[in-house]
Length: 331
Image (cartoon, rainbow, N blue to C red):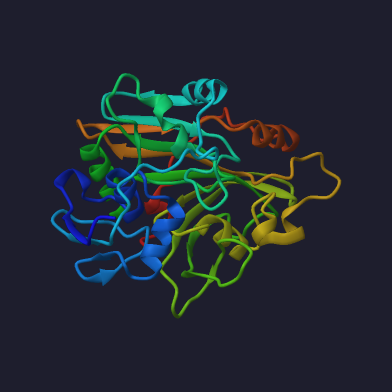
C-alpha cells in the first residue's frame, strides 16, 4: 500500500467527473471501492467531501487515501465489446470529424455502467477511435430507454468545451415523443421544479416547487390521433434527471410506454403498440469547436416508427426542427 497522496488536477482533466478522473488516474480501482472511499470521506477535493459526479476544476488538490498499486485480478465481468456490438455502434454514427462523433444511441443501452451493469456504451467506445490514440469521451447522457442523438468528444480539450456548453445551456436539444392523450394548450412552457425521490425502486424524481431544482421545457404538439395520442416535440432548457418524463405527466399526458412514471395510464388498450418508452432525442444543435453551427438529427427507432405508422404520423413532412422560443414567450 502506498501512503496518502495529494494530487493536482491537470489542465486536460478540468471538467472531468470525480469517478472519471479516478478511472483515468487509477484504472485498477474498482467502482465499488471508489464509492466506499467517497462515502466515508477518504477522498476529498480541496478538503471537502465530494460525490462521484462532482466536476473538477484545474488546479484543485485531491486527497488520495492509501491505494494498492498492484493491478487487479482478472475479472470475468469486465465488459469486452463484441464484434457485433462494435459493428452496430459504427453503423450508428451520424457524423464524425477530428473533434466530435455523433451517434444514434439505441433504446435499451445504458450510457454508463453501474452496480451489476456490465454492458453499456462507455465500455464500447474503443470501437469509435477511428485511428485516434484515445477513445471518445462522454460529455452528456441519455436515459437507458431513451434513443437518439448522443454527442462524444474525441479529446480532452473538446470534452471540456462541450461539457461547459451543456452546463451553460448553449446546446439546443430536441426530443420527439408519443404521449397518451393530447395536452392543452397545444404548445407552451412547462416550468416545474424537480427533486429526487427517496426509495429503493431505482432513480426517480418528482415535482418539488419549494425545494426542487428549476426545470424548464418548451413543448409543441406536431400531430395527434384524435384524442387518443399525440406526437410532441420537447425542447428542454434544463437537463434534470427524467425531466421530460415528469413534465409530460404534469401535462396530463404521460409518455407512451413510461410505466415508471405513468403507470397503467402510459399504455393504450386495444392497440398493437410496443410497450417501450416512446422518447427519442431527435436532434442537437451546437457550435462546433472549429467554428460554425452543427445540427444533427437521428432517425426514429423501429418501435416508435411502427407506432407512428399505427397513428398515421408522418415524420417525413417538412417542419421547423427546433421550437421557436419567441412563439412561446420569454419564460
